[in-house]
Image 1 (cartoon, rainbow, N blue to C red):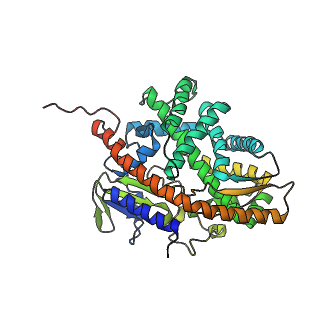
Image 2: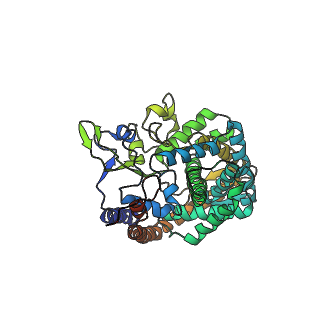
Image 3: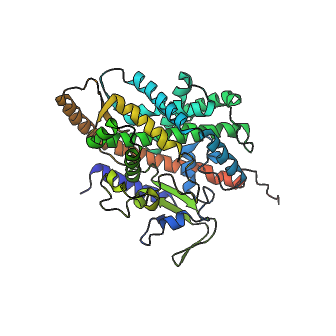
Length: 438
């Protein structure tokens, strides 16, 4: 018999299917065509032609039309992508040290005592607000900006998890701040974008996606360490072991990829495996499904599975594939995450007994204990009992909240048709469509 959370998840899926009328092809499938289709040049449509796009644009407003993930191929995308890579570029050592410094400052201010119960995603979000602010503006992040960035990013990811509704006014505060600071950005911003679009580009790319995804990634990684003390201790004892850290990170992102489903629109017929996926098909790629194939005991966390195995030769694409728009942060993310993990483990022992799922709706509750003054073992056990009880209790009401709010947002997104209405009046490069009058 299904538990209440499992039943609610099943209902949410049915609601989503009922309100989304796209003819969707979900991969991986029984033919194992995932990577072949994912890498195909024609699997490159981003938003135009899929009703599913309206929901993603709804979550990512303001400025989803210039969000790098949703820009259609062409000169505007190329301009934006080059800018993103320039902002994220730099010597590896400098990128590492910046992440270490930002993490240390946040941890020392947020956890001044010996022990603390925290939500790991919340703990990490100010770190990445500071980090990406420095990459964009090349100066330390002031408290006012950090508060705006964290509030905006938390609003976005809370809506994505369907645990809260969007707050446009909260997002607008960051938009206004970035508009004021736009002349101070030392990077050459995409010339193909208007001033307003440049503001939305910065907000969506660096202070939405970057902050949210790095916070989620660190929450997964630290929760894994909290629940695998042997792995945690090995990293704490030898923070310079880059190879072992890479194995732990690869295994974490295999089990808990940051994206659940990515949708693409076929811009031409795709011939694969003796069959044809017609132009206009909405292709949904399930990262968790793909990451669970090709492994022995795929549900088990086991960093040693990467001994003698290259992630390039496995079903493992946490940053996408080179043939079709890989994540622009594929280089900087592992560097920065290793720096942040080193700073956390230098200070704290992590313990947690909560459930660990890819969506991470509970924001990863965890007990942090100072390594220099560890609490008695009975305290840690008591905290574990409390965390387990609270996690179970919260999951019951949270599941109902997700069902109600998720249904509301899906219906509201369909009503607003942000993507559909945009492409009704603009071509793929954002230029107005001039229709002949009759």
